[in-house]
Image 1 (tube, rainbow, N blue to C red):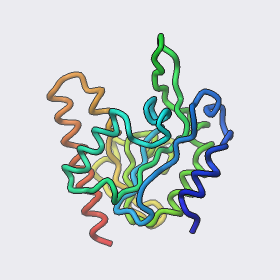
Image 2: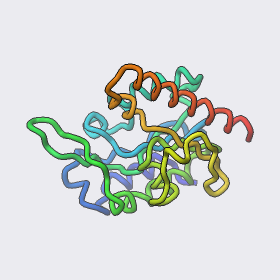
Image 3: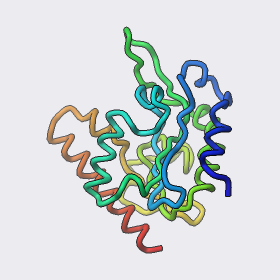
Image 4: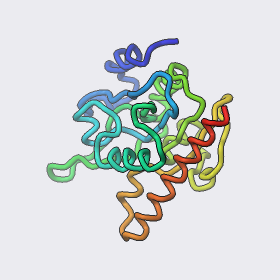
Length: 196
């Protein structure tokens, strides 16, 4: 089993797609090698790109709060993204997130597969559609898969929304509903992990 720190070192020089040109750095996964859960998001955001760590920006704060509410210690999970470089477009001085293409997701798939092989966990959490598509293919739809425990080569996968969906909700009631659903899905992942 290859250590994730060695994988991160190798990924630092990745040029499998053009995203490396505008990104500050490769943002590889981090966390426990024997993780209670392995969480897969879409791609690093602006703050993650600058810090070189996954889920440290606004969506990461939502995720941390939801993990705590679901009774999960962030130190017991491994967090990563399907795509390892930040895809963005300039809007004034701000860098605005752009959804990665199927080609960019495919270019990063070997890194994600290596992480899945290196991290000892029984349950994967797909945070959003891009993560689900990276794991299951382009026909995956998070809305249809949510609430189910899916199988990926003998590992349970629980699909849920990306924490950024909570932030994008315009009305407070919608934010509360999205957040409650995220927490419920994380709890479902914990239950799936306890069955193994």
